[in-house]
Image (cartoon, rainbow, N blue to C red):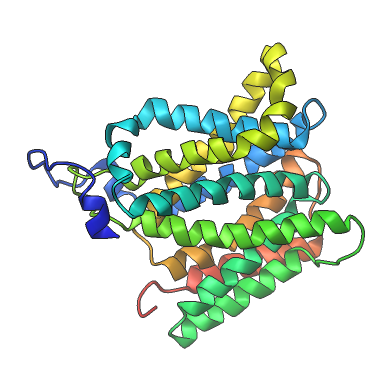
Length: 307
């Protein structure tokens, strides 16, 4: 993959490899920012469901994020070279995954509590974290975080069965997002400014995602174009749900082993519970709070060494 991405364009003059301010930040900070916005955006989207159909909100999120990425990263500078490389298939696959994952996630949270969908979403990443576990300490961390997620939400397949179908499909797609996103993030040297960054490649995938989501979502999003407030809210959901978390995910993935990143995703149900309580008034129970403590301890004792 690295050789494929290096072939995307000519090599400009060498650039300074001095660490930037972002390089000096711990990757855990990027993850925490992503975790906050990962569910802050959807919680705002749930409020928008009262005005716009679910798939319409999903389309507004994806399309607005694609426009922002295109204006910011200008992916057409190198996208024509992708057509000559096998790597374009990876970016296309990620785009399709993002479109389907976002749509199914919204269909799930329209029927189930945000914390429940967040807990189900974590199940797939347990597999990724377990696959990278090489030490007893990390095995204990995985067990503790998994138990904590189970405590946060006792998943029962009763009521809203279609919501659970959507949630488990989203779980599979979220696992694919981590795999494909990590491959893109690690496809180049982050200090080599002569190559397209993971964020540049993500911008191409977001354009593919917008194209994939348009046939099923554009029709339901049309009412927003006659209500500027709704349209602005949809753009806000795109910024909070896709632009900020996906960019910070790339920054974290480039500097963390995949198993470590997957384990840290156990924090997502924690943030889903907290944000659901603040924005949607879905108050946590004592069991939820105990689960949050277990997840926090499990992530804290995990070691990135000897994966």
